[in-house]
Length: 238
Image 1 (spheres, rainbow, N blue to C red):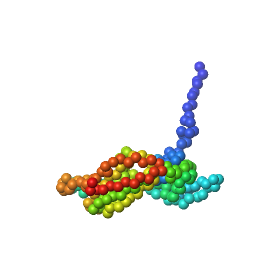
Image 2: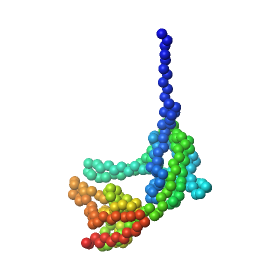
Image 3: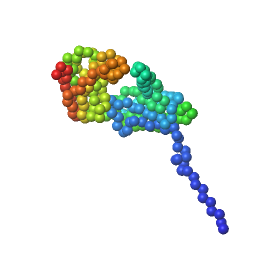
Image 4: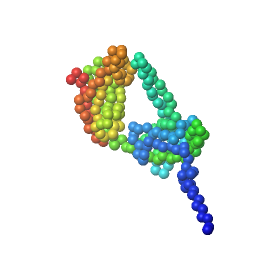
């Protein structure tokens, strides 16, 4: 009998795919108040910005934009047996942000050519391009709030419908604060009485008989629409 042999080969796409990949948080549209962030599949040791290009497109012309590529930081906090908190800030080895001025209603492309990023194992990226358009200002709204009868240092936080903090201000006295470039949606405010002036909310420490810093919630929910400006007043004595 004849012998029949079958040879199976992996497709070229799967076999030759570069494992060092770059992804971005930006789709086709960039929000005005958002960062352009990129992430690599391996920790990055070297960054060569001469192999990175940021272009702004206007009509048929391309304009080269100056930029910085900044590593993200990791903030970690540790609590020891006596409930003392230590902070540690580290550079993230896979996440970075592209820092430049992105103009409203403008189209951009960010291209990372081979050699732009190199991993600790010597891997480098293939040509990777991200193209997007920046949103227009009329897609957003503004909330202005006037705080009355504030008699100590405080932290004002703007909270969205998913309980995310989308804006933060450090206050030392009564006055007005403006939050702009907000997406349409529902918002409210939270005020933290910052008794130790450290800029964050401190929980209570049972062993030291220290109570948590006081939180005050705004009494209503605000529904913001695109291209709206809302004026609110918050009397802390009421």
